[in-house]
Image 1 (spheres, protein in one colour):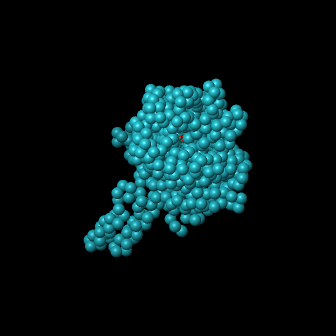
Image 2 (tube, helix red, strand yellow):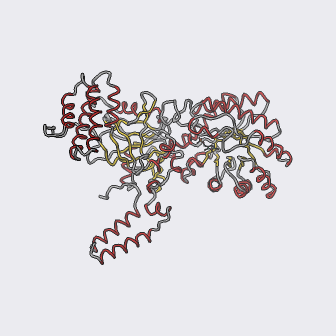
Image 3 (cartoon, protein in one colour):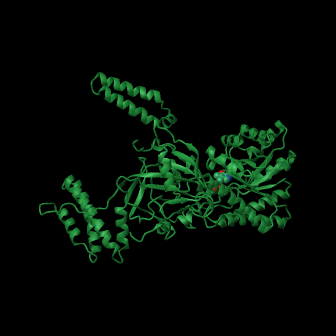
Length: 636
Ligand SMILES: *Cc1c(COP(=O)(O)O)cnc(C)c1O
């Protein structure tokens, strides 16, 4: 306890590895945020910020967004490509594009457009509604708009007409049927459309989204369809309109080797199409640039490369092939989404309580009058020491099963069973502390630690705020945001507010081994004091994939800019009220209040409720409907 410090916490939680320089721990033992990256510009104490936000009446769980981190990420990716261009003598341009599906929040996309203006950052849309968003937000003539996804006539005509507003809109043919729709629309409006082909690569990505490429992938043209497409464009005298070649091998690609192989295949497509007379100017290498969620450099939640290595590989592969064929270097479009926005948001929530199974004190001693099983347990408790620990462990396991059987057969009463369970946990607690000090007891310790592991009840919903943790087993860094100068002496797992047994987090970073562990080292909670945890790197995909399981809605969200003088709250986006969430499932507030009011009138008539009680019930009911869907602290 005594020689613990914030540096040990940093090591334990691996924050230096996954924090990318944005997050670290300060000497007060609080998480600290530096949006410009390590030692770069102003910074802020996340715990103090949380206190300030709560003082303003903003409620936990809070999604805190740092737009300055997005700015750093946009600039980082741009500068990596510029550096690679310099190094390899590449002559094309870099055109970064943000796919809005990754996080479509208005303020966030607006900020991206603002930060990206000088760097010509474009936007990508994957559906008609997303195109409508993009057209409302993009006003740059220099940046490209990439249209992907399933398209109907309306989508395509809107995209083509936007060219007449000076937008550089490129329509990517994802399915062969779309080509004729584009050609018809171009004739109708007398324009030369900018067309892209998405190629189905046979190179597969890797990791959780491996099915995004290969012959059975949902999108893209096969080689046969590409050759037919070229014929059609040639016949229409529109080969010059085919400006872009696109491919995308999936998200969060963990290995640089998969990226390299897909690039080689994609670059070959580019050269062939060029040779066939297409007016190609751009190669769009898609998304997939990963985020190091656990900081281990291995496994699906991590990546074995960095942004600069990614840029170097894209640029050098293209350059080598184009130079070999004597083709001008194309402009490079990337559709990295996750890598731009994952880091910028943190979900902060409080702990509501702990199910603590550690039992330092045994129950009252068993006597001769008690059933044998109770006397056996009493005996184990008294006798256990480091020499007989194996034997005692086996006896304890046996006694646990026996207790249950005896209760089921009606031999033990409920009170006796309760005594046995209390004693079981008292023995397990004592046994674990002996095992810790005894060599060769790893196996026993592991089992007991699991048995005695605490459950921390958390004020958030996994399904709303980190759905990928549940859906695809994605790991997110989770840790306390304060008390980090103190040793976290407990082991716990996290359970959310939903009634779903899947609503939990039971997989944590083990920075020591680079693998996962089943429990999180965590502090004791103190009476009368709040304890706050953060889930980090939640900026990509989570918000929009989040659902209303058990009717827990959007959390409060704030956009915080940090400057030398402190910080400013640029936007406060209140979370859903209960009324709003209910309206998504067709419940109307007035009708609900009316029904309950009528029931109280009935109760008043029948004298089952007083007028005062009825008034209070209606008040609670109406306030509940206007309130937050998460647990709230009573107003002081
Ligand atoms: C989802 C998607 C992206 C974004 O991928 P990230 O891994 O988030 O960078 C890019 N392009 C296409 C076509 C996509 O479907």
